[in-house]
Length: 107
Length: 107
DNA sequence: ACAAAGGTTAGCAAATATGCTAATCTTATA
DNA sequence: TATAAGATTAGCATATTTGCTAACCTTTGT
View (cartoon, rainbow over the protein chains, first blue to last red):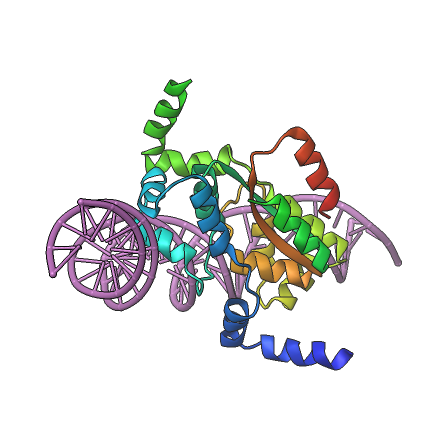
C-alpha cells in the first residue's frame, strides 16, 4: 500500500495535475452550499450581490459547479449576508455517517 | 433594532472598512487550526511545506494571527497533507454550546 | 409572442494571494 | 556559549481571484 502514495506524490509534483486534481476530483461542493444558503435567505443572486457589494456574475461564478478558487474573505461575506455562519474545520477523515450527519446539521 | 443594520450597511459600503472588519473583527482563527492540524500530524512547517510543494514561509503566513486572505485550494492541500479533511459549512448562527461542541469534534 | 426577472458566460483591469529567496529571531540541546 | 532546527518576516515577481460590463440564455407570467 505504499506504492499508491509514492505514485500520487509523484503526480502531485506537477502543478497542472495538482490544480486539476483539486478542481475535478476533490470536489467540496461549495457552490451548492452557497446556492442553498442563498435560497434559504430568500435572496436572488442580484440581491445577495448587492448586500455584499459585488455583482450577480460573481455570485453565479461561486455557485457554478466547475469553480474551485474560493477565498475565505468572500465566502464569509456571502455566508453572513445569508444570515449564516461560515465554519471551517480541519476534521478527522470522514466516514459516510459523518457526512450524513454533517448534511443534517448544515442548511 | 433596525438602525444598527442601517448603520452597518453604510459602513460596509466603504471598501477599506469591509476589509478591516473581516480582518480584525470577524476572526475565524484559521491560523490556529492550521497549526493544530500540523502539530497533530507531527510535521514542522518545513515538512508540511515540502508535502504541498510550497515553502515554510507560506505556512508561517497561514498560521500567523493577522492574516485573513485564505483560499480554499491552499487550505485544502494543507488539510490533506495533515491527514485531515477540510469541512466548509454554512451553518445557522452559533450558540456558545455549538462552539464548544465544534471544538470537541475538530482536532 | 412578448416582457421582465433570474441566471449564466466571456473578457478584461485591478486587487489579492502565492511562491520564492534571504535575512532574522527563537528555542532546544550539546 | 555555540550550534542547529524551527519559525517569522520582508520584499518581490508571478499567478489567481475579484469586480465589473455587457451580452446572452431561461423561466415565468401576461
